[in-house]
Length: 57
Image 1 (cartoon, rainbow, N blue to C red):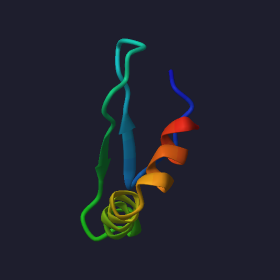
Image 2: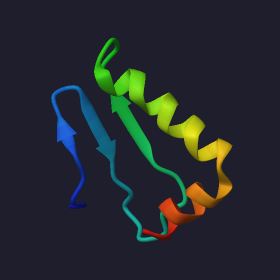
Image 3: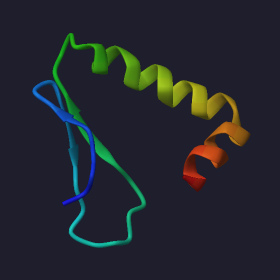
Image 4: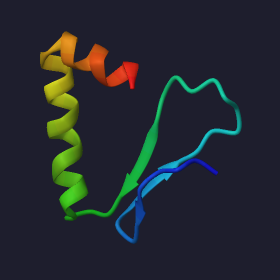
């Protein structure tokens, strides 16, 4: 099991392999997670250096 954030309003889906290229998250409609996920994505897309730093984690 991965050490990921899970709440009643958000669930990160896990892969059965170690070769992760994509991540999936299920979020409840109207939750703070629904509002924040697109903002986070848009900030990474707007700044390639920020995306590279995030991917290096």
